[in-house]
Structure formats: structure tokens, C-alpha cells
Amino acid sequence: MVLSLTEKSYLIDSLSSTPPVRSDGRAAYQFRPIEISTDFLPSSNGSARVISSDGSECVVSIKSKVINYTVDPELIVVDIDITSHRDDSPFVRSLSSMFGNLLVKTLNTDQLYLTKKHAFKIYIDVLVLSSNSYPGSLISFSIYSALNSTFLPKLVSSKDDLDVEVLPTFHDYDFVKLQFDVPLVFVVAIVGDNVIVDPSAAETDVASNGLILTWHNGKVMAPIRNVGMNNSFTRGFSMEHVTKAITFINTYAPRVVKALSV
Amino acid sequence: MNVQDRRRILGPQNAKPITFSSVRSETDAGSSTEDDNARLVEKDGQGSMFIKSGLVSNANGSSYLELNGNSHYSLLVTSVYGPRPIRGSFTSQATVSVQFKEVTLERWSSGEVMEICNFLTNVFNAVIRLERYPKSGIDIFLNLIQHSDSKKSEEDISLVSILPYCINGITLALVDAGIEVVDMVSAGRYNRNVIAFGKNGEEIVGYWQDDNEEDILNVVQKCREEYFKGRETMVNYLVSKNSDSM
Image 1 (cartoon, rainbow over the protein chains, first blue to last red):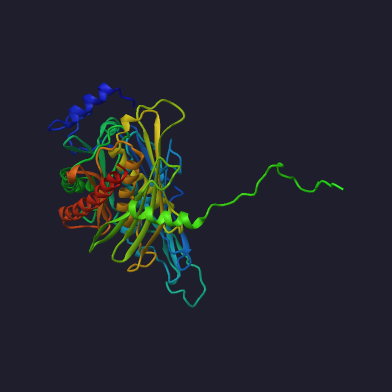
Image 2: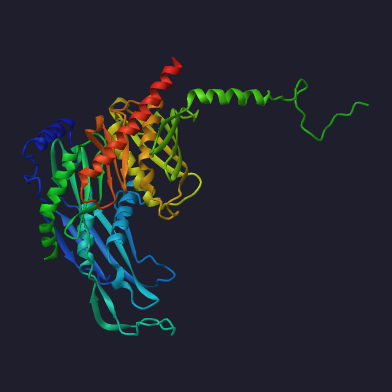
């Protein structure tokens, strides 16, 4: 959406007022409605499709492969693809690096180990089909829903294959649900003295800065970092903004988790 | 018999062999000016920072930092090219790009490096007065020549630990290039958390938290102290450099 300078200035003024007046009538802590469908890709172990009310859409597919982890110790791989952005653009690369590091650090991979040699390697492929605003939360919600609907084949062969050279064999139709405590990533925008969650495209255009916060194990955790939302209005912010954003997420993230778990 | 040499391409008739001027006098002069221009600006328990700017002659501005801490030692060269005209459509303000390269080794994955570059671009988007340079691009190149830490193994050295140096280096290079900035920004680090400040520590321009901290305000305080120290060092250097040239 291309806004004129006058429209942007109007938007900044209304978003900076107390309480902020958002163009879609939301409160500062309110998210846009999203529509989630899970487990719709028959060839994946888990999948999710999240559509935001502004037409942003994200598809995540979780695939698994049995590998010898003594050779390849990396068990979780994240790949993010965003339409209209080159794969090697700083934006896409830094998003996938951030999500990759976050998931590798927070997910407990113990359940992926099958035998003393073999383990499941999980490929998380994210495809953002269209995004108008910063896609951080959208990607995170999709990964969350996909990982929570992932089923892996059940192992029927022996768990000890150190002495005997045997490949793991799986049950024909029994699956085990993956039990991950998946972190959530929230994006908040800073306009004036206010902090608003889940900024829309127009709000992204005028935000003076943005913050990415992670929610895991019932509290806000690292990584927390600021991210420029646009090139023209980027300004510094104060510590009050950060503490305000953390309080916001601490208060409202449990509700988001609840909504996503239904 | 006058036989012309046809096997070689001969130079002109009046060619003279090149002679080099005495190297000895050059180095002597060099070392004496070095003492004048470069100084060890900060020296306390925390370590020292050696600053020199304008070393890269073909860049619009550059800075060279030598950081000597308790256990680590880093060399960082920053060069700024611009504001230079960009091709394509009209832009009402400058676009900033930051590229980081480790010259000697490649320890970090390109994704991580890209994340840092993206972060630094965001920081300096807020710091440089972009609207003063329409239709132009400002390209910042960071070259890390050395970074070693005697206390940590090669794998444990995180990219975040050099992030404050990158911010200091870019600020100095921007000043050297004469590009308008809102304020002298500097950053402080506490564990793996880096916060960049401006406006006398009132304003945060970059926030990078990689460690889980119970008390965030304490982290901010620690980083702010380092910010004041770094800024003072840079300002002292710039003041003494300018008083020399006058």
C-alpha cells in the first residue's frame, strides 16, 4: 500500500495519541484475526497454513528424514522463502538465520533420536506466499501450528544398533506425535510513546522502530532485538518502549498460545 | 655493423631507468607522524582502544580500530563510500548498506553475518540524516582483520562480541567522511547483549539481546556505562585530531 506523506503524517499522529487510534480500530494489544488450517499436505509429516485478515499467507511444511547423527549432528533445519524477495536478500537471510538459531536452541531434540546411530532430521520449510507487513509473527504462528500437528513414524525395531548393523524399521500406520515446546515470536511497532502489537502494512510504513520478542516457557526470552520497519521514519526509542513491549507480551502471549492450541 | 634488436619490444630512445628515492628517510618520517596522529586514547582496567581515521585513501571516510582487552584482541577497518549517486529511480533520501567481512578467517555462517549487517543497517538508518542525501547511497564496509580471545575457544567466540566495535568503527568512519549524523553513537555489551545509544544515553538506537536476563535494567545500565566510555574516547580522539590539523 502506498500512502502519501499527508496520510502518513495523519497516521503517525493518530497512532501516537493516548490511547493509540489504529486505522483498523484495534486496541494496542490486539492481533488481527488469523485463519489456520493444519495437516493439509499429505506428503509432509506436519503442515500448517496461516492466513491473516490482510491477505498475508504463510505455508509451513515439516518433513523428516532418518539420518546417521554421528555423521550429521544437525537435526533441525529451517528454510524461509518469501515471495517478492530474493533468497539471498539480507531480509530473508537474516529472518531464516534468526528462526533457525532460535529453534535449534529452544527445541528439545531428545525425542528425535531413534537408535544409538540414527535420528530424525526435521526440515522446516516456510513459504510466505504474500505478506504486506513484517512477517515475523506470521511465520512464527505457522511454525508453531505445524510443529504441533507433526506426527513421526513409530519405531518398531530395536533401539540398540551399535553392534548390529540394522536400519530402523517403522510401524506401518502408527505415528507418534511430536512434543515440542515451540517458541513464539512477536513483532511490535513503536510509534511515538506507544507500542502496538502486530502492526499492519500501513502501521509498518510509519513506525519509528520495531521490536522482535520471543516467548518461550511462559515468559519473554532472548532473542529480543529491534528491527527497522521502514527506511524513512526510523528513529531511536527509549527503554520505556522495551519494558512496555515486554509487559504487553507477558500479559497477552498466554492468550495467543491458548488461541493457537485450540 | 649496427644490428637492431628485433626480438624485444624496445622502449623509447630517451627512456631512463626508474630510481626509487631513499626508503629510509620515508619510514623515519612515517614513524614520527604516526606518533602525532595516532594515540592510545583510552587506557584503564578495561583495556585500550587505538583509533586512527582516514587510512583508506580511496574511501570517503574510514577508521581503524585496535582493541586490546583483558583477554581479547581485535583489529577492525571500516570504510565508508558515499554519499554517491545511485542508479535507477529517484529516491528522496539516501539508502544505507552495511557489509561485514572477516578477512583472515570465516568463522561465522553467512546467515549470522547477514543478521548482524541487517541490524547495523537498521541502527544507522536511525542515526544518519538520510533526508539530507537524496538520490544517493552510503555503503559501509567492515573488515575484521583479527579477533582473538585467549579465554574462549574458536567456536565459542560469538559475532555479538564485536558488534559494539563495529558500531564505534562505523560512527568514526562516518564522521571522517563528513556524513551528517544525529549524534555520536556508541554501544555497550554485557554478556551477549548489545545496546547502542545516542542522545547522551537517553535514546536506544540498537537493541540486541541474546542472553536471558532477569534484570534488563541492569543490563541497560552496564551497556550505558560502556557507551559513555566509548563515546568519550571517540570524542577525545576527534578533538585532538582537529586541534592538530589547525
